[in-house]
Image (cartoon, rainbow, N blue to C red; front, side, top):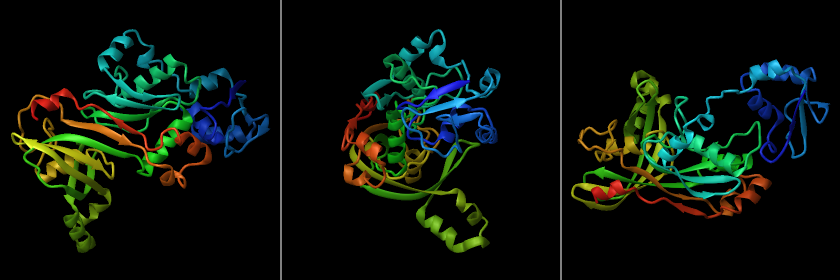
Length: 344
């Protein structure tokens, strides 16, 4: 028998959600069957899985060690446990802007993945996990600290992570509701002299890892043509994007642009500026100019602003609102990488 004592990082979620994470490799049908047969119980009573867990609850699994081992996430390849991980961590040069027992604000350099793609990668996620271990902030077998938003490998700047389950849940809700304002600085080719409020439609092809982007006018024309147009048949793939672009300064044929993401789609800033004819310096996918500049794309997530209480009071639960009070109207800033200064 295995017992899971519900603490801070397990509370506030449904029993079935906890079990799906704990028995990660098991079919959901197996978990429901074990609940029905009382092989999994909550506080020594039969449960459906829809119960909301509270601190102090007890979940018992009357399963063999072999069954649990089979269905648990027992991957031992986590870079944090491997020899040499300290060197990889130091080489990653990831910095912490802010951290407490619930959330982290991280400054990611370009060239580092948000989440690992192969077992030997050292990602921002690994960094967050290491931090929680080193500080003794997470003792849960179920919840794993992790990032709640992503940046492309070659985009630098601010990322948010949940250190605790309540912190992760709160951040995820705020991002989903687009209540956290995210600002970027980017260096574009050409002199971009006027503010542009761009609305476009974007579709990212997973096979080519490149986005196709069309103007709102073109999208609307295709909608009007309706089903008679072959191009209109693919319109459901395209998602609306909204971007505010404000020139900060321009010099020597380059412009420093402040970007506010109103929507957040993969490759959005890169694709929008490429479409407008002001590609990002160092960018390759959406730069038709093919300027031979030996640098990562100069796109930096430099500012993140949390909302005020009035904005979130109808979105967050009571416990989440209590947690949110620590971050109300907080403004986090990341320094612009030195490489930008080569062109300014």
